[in-house]
Image 1 (cartoon, rainbow, N blue to C red):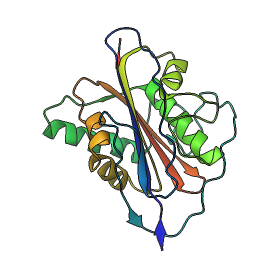
Image 2 (cartoon, helix red, strand yellow; image 1 turned 45 degrees about the vertical axis):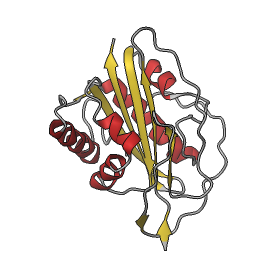
Image 3 (cartoon, rainbow, N blue to C red; image 1 turned 90 degrees about the vertical axis):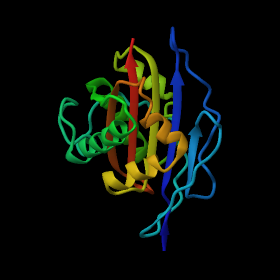
Length: 209
């Protein structure tokens, strides 16, 4: 049987004051598919074989504060990533090095934003850049107190290992653009287990203002 896998991204690059962009893309009705707002406004597709999963339930509006839930980052704070999340950072930086970009530095605030969104998706059982409380990625970054000049977000669901999820993002032009954007300087990565897809990943990039 085939387990649906999904990846999605959002991109934001502002020279001055950051302004939230509208989130027009919604979850695809027939997985596997990527969703989001890449610069080309196109969709990417990825797939893999595993056990079947049920269709995600309807999203409910629940505010999720920025707390680190055990099993997301693997630590009681965001200064230390879990081994899986650190592998995602390391693999992303390997691709950046090959492209001539400086390595990304892990940010506690961006990690908190990533952890909150992954846990929200896993707990509330949905897959979208829009949080269950209606928040955008930019809202979630700002809630941590992080002030950015540019930011981007990749999300994924269903992948079990760091290698699988990074490869899926890299194989998608829009997601790869986020990973290899040399103007982005910092990163936060987290995952959470639960929901219909089993594991939900969030990768947040930004450059502090």
